[in-house]
Image 1 (cartoon, helix red, strand yellow):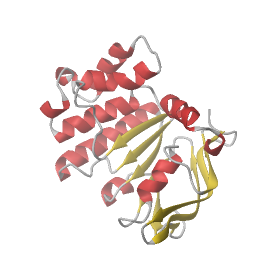
Image 2 (cartoon, rainbow, N blue to C red):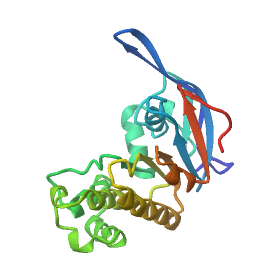
Image 3 (cartoon, rainbow, N blue to C red):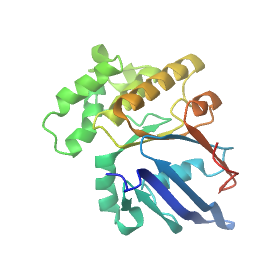
Image 4 (cartoon, helix red, strand yellow):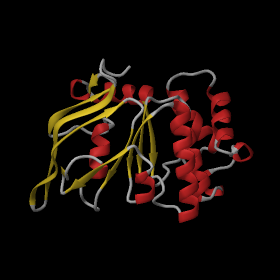
Length: 229
């Protein structure tokens, strides 16, 4: 469930500071944002601006040094690591630049994984259907090393959407693909997103992909640079 105002995700003055060999490093500094249910938002900016760090915090993969994040009506800072993981399994999907498929599992087994973690007894049937939706029914028993980069990313998309997440986080989903394959993956990503009415938060260097989102947020040296477009 989202909050009473239809806000899927909000962040209030979040910062992230880490200790490095040269002293303390501020990665994010006072970032605040709101994302409506069903909205698509692109987070853009130069390398090192804090985009991936922000995405990880919004998804509950890490905790901010200061500030608060509310995901689907739940304050993430009020949860321990195990509770955040349970929330992610139930509500969140992920797509990464490097696919993050398990090499010892075939395509169908990779897509089944989030359903098996939920204890679903229809995991294989739903995984097969999800792979058919991304055009990989004939490749469902192939292992990642037997698939092209575009095919691996389609498996990753099927895995991300198979449990019907409320929010999808995508970190450079076309970054490891050639232009033509990346465009096809972008088409598929937005088609699946519309089909599932999912809130989409996307980090990308691809201006064409970012332009397909309802609005963009530009990060510069850990801060939001002006109003979101």
